[in-house]
Length: 551
Image (cartoon, rainbow, N blue to C red; front, top):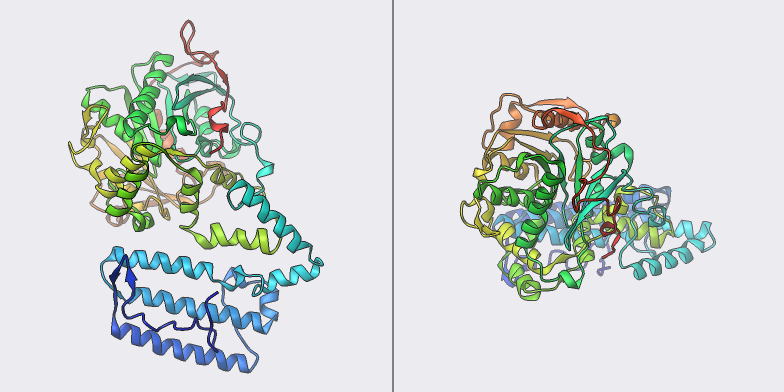
């Protein structure tokens, strides 16, 4: 913890802040705003000190300080109130920074990390709840917390859930199916039909390779894969291999040609259909768009319709992740792994966790270590902790050409698998989904795909965030979604919303109605996996072996 003055403020809170440094360059603060912040801070600090002297200290409305122990301990209440006062002043000073928006965003991100890390709830000496629990348990909570910390150190990450309660293939990723093809990059899983008839045109799911595919198949009641099968679609999914050093030289071209396009070809061969439907989720959607642009350049119409879930095609707005991206960062990645090596999955997972440090980092530090608690079992958080590596050349190329230089929306700027890409030439029905509160693919960025992709498009906005908005089964009757039926796609999401209607419940039902129009007639469901008298036979039961490999 930083040194505190008499009123609980970090020593030198305002000293020297007229010229803070960011990346070696001085950053100025608006003098008038800074003066107003100082005056308000002094006023609020004096009020806090006066209330404390009277023995009445209001505890901040913050769930970190909501327990009775904070309310009943005057010193703890004062510590929490002082922290809240200092945190507000620091965040106000961020808004006083003079500079471009990216500079302010970087400073804001850094200050948010500092503020989250220095909360008194994070320290046993200041956390009244943890202290009370230690007394109530005769020190057992501290002993258990030390055991939890040592266990997490051995496994290499902070536990967000009771991971012992889950096993891939036993109680997550349980939809019945079989691996019908594999190469060094992926296994292709075909799922057992749950209807006597299926649409003749099959469905291929392309999940992100920075996570494991079973986010789409967590439990039977929230599985998008199972929902597809139950609605009569012959369903396949790409299950990515978790790369080790042997795949450390794989490139973006390898993943598009030998995985995305290869999967399309195999599903066509197995089904005997000239066209299939395809879905891409997050980075899987970006990869699918690349594959479709390659096929378009070749005049190949293997895909009849595409669905993009929380996908970036136009990287103009990359949300909070933009704070990491600049020429120096990308060049560093290119120098360290652009020619070979791995981007460690745990490093990626940590980065995403620190985008929400209070909820996804310090919450578990406090619960696991200070209070000695075991987090409850939660399938989504188990999946979130099951990290995957990325080949360095793939990762470095992705950063430069998409996040830094936004070349995917520039016709002819990228060459993938020997073809110059022009996403406007992707001419097919496209269903585009974005989540309203997504901090990884902002809703405006998801909507921006409507401005650059060819073909007839349908856009839907769902409530909630990057994952919860997507994994929203109709039976739960949760959240809502927005649709616009006039077929118009104005420049921005705000204009689109002016003509949109909010509908209760999941967007899955609308998607299924839309997908059926591109799926052909109904035929008898296949009785075996793969295709008779070919190499496409059941190699092993779903979920296969690739998904079980740990980073």
